[in-house]
Length: 75
Image (cartoon, rainbow, N blue to C red; front, side):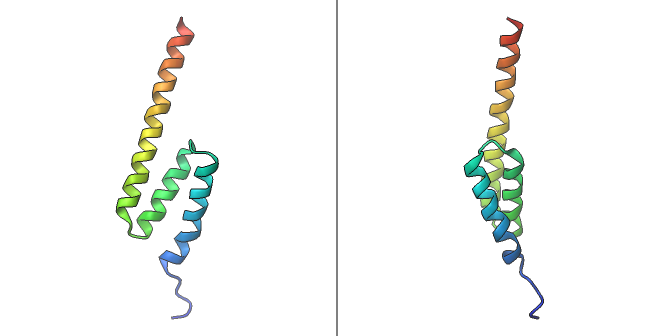
């Protein structure tokens, strides 16, 4: 049994890395997905949902920015 590594042990380090990366660059959408996947692996589904919601909000904001930029270019 000593060779079995728990999912919690495997996912905590990447989770910490994701949190650090988001502190550096909060617009890195892929990092949000990785962070949410870590929470899912830890069976912390509510936290995963919250991260996915943050990711969706970021994507929505980016989409609006591109629309505004496109309109500005056409003027």
